[in-house]
Image 1 (cartoon, helix red, strand yellow):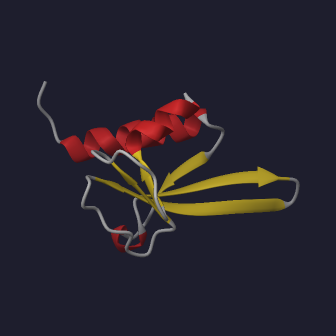
Image 2 (cartoon, rainbow, N blue to C red):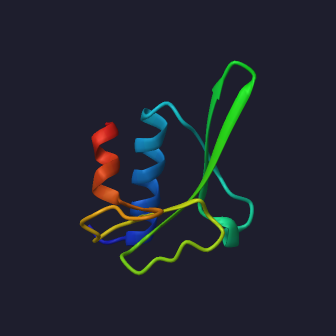
Length: 87
């Protein structure tokens, strides 16, 4: 099929998070992460910045990094396959 693997990862994460009842927005500045996920309950809104990438992707200024080609979660790292559990 071809295409850029990074775009496919980001599209998958955006789709899975939106199914998980999060509002998904792209960040205005790539240095702070790829997406901002937000949920609201009452008058409180919680926001989480995430970075999406391969197994060597760094956290940068995001709250969590979602990595492809990673088997186990650890610290602020979430394997991409684990997001599929929300579907």
